[in-house]
Amino acid sequence: MIALNKPLTPDLATLTNYLTQVNDSGWYTNFGPLHQLLTERLEKYLGVENLLLVSNGTLAIQVACKALNINSAITTPFSFVATTSSLLWQGIETAFSDIDEKSYNLCPQALDKALTQDNHYDGIVATHVYGNPCDVNALGEIANKHNKKIVYDAAHAFGVNIAGESVLKFGDAGTLSFHATKVFHTVEGGAIVFKHKADYERAKQLINFGIQANVKLGEPGINAKLNEYQCAVGLTLLDEIEQVIEHRASLFNLYRDELNCIVELPQWHNLANFNGAYMPIYIADKKLQQKVIDALASKNIQSRRYFTPSLDIAYSEQYSFGCEVSHEIAGGVVCLPLHAYMQKKDILQVTNEIKALVV
Image 1 (cartoon, rainbow, N blue to C red):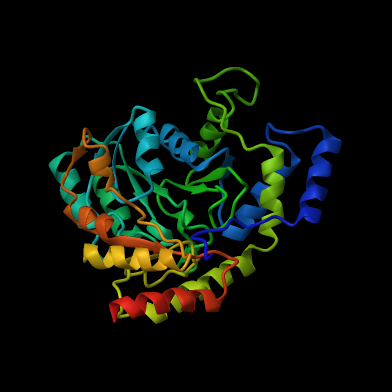
Image 2: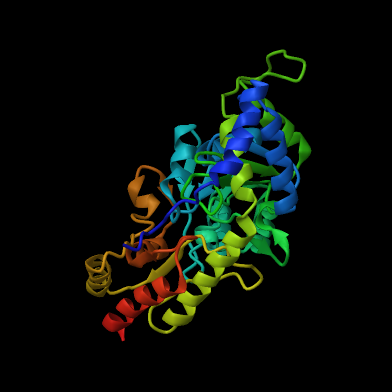
């Protein structure tokens, strides 16, 4: 079987060494030594500052919005459900603006029109869908024009840069998911990178029940810390992450070379590198789309219609500024298998099955 995804397996010898350190110290959570080490190594690898580890990617979005005083937001309808559900769970008033038909990311023109129509929202929450960066310059200009905070959901974009600068440097905050299915993981976990140190410091208190540095209680907080065992997994996998991303990117490029002009592919940011997080294709014809899915399944090749439905449909009680493009894309996108344990022959097997039906 060619699995849709297969999480990275930590080397047990290296992992055991880290876990032994934890057991010997007796410091299992609450910003322990491995937490500090992983923070430092991630900041160095990603080229960022003000990185705060948290217990999952959903809480990363929630804590980022809380730290930035975002109580109402416009977001994308085309993303994993957590992008929207994390906002709604926190009681953030949420509205949807449409996506760009080529990149599948939040459309700057549609967003500007939405904010011109209704300017009461505090912030913007945009996703770098499939690891493909948003038009951060255009969205940044719109955020400045309308005086809005912007949070980027970068759950798919670990290791992605724009003109050599991490995607996490754009906006007021960028969030990561370290779920086991991601390019880099800690089994469960996540991180927030803040533009401003003051926001980072506030968020660090928030994830520890609101306890201040002087051990006095501040504003109400939550428990969103990443424990030492999970940090051990992250440190183990970080040793090999450059090779992992290089390999995944090579598979991604092979897919796109083989399927170019066969099916529609999203247009990637022209100044960004690839991390091979996902391999989306678009097939508008529903019957053909289902034939492709069925043909792959008959050969034990997994695929997934990801993301569907468009989130403005799933959460229809929330206001929508009109999301027709998202409806079309959500109805036609299929993600093909892509993970670090695949080889070129696997990609060619998948693409040959698709070509046999489409060409």
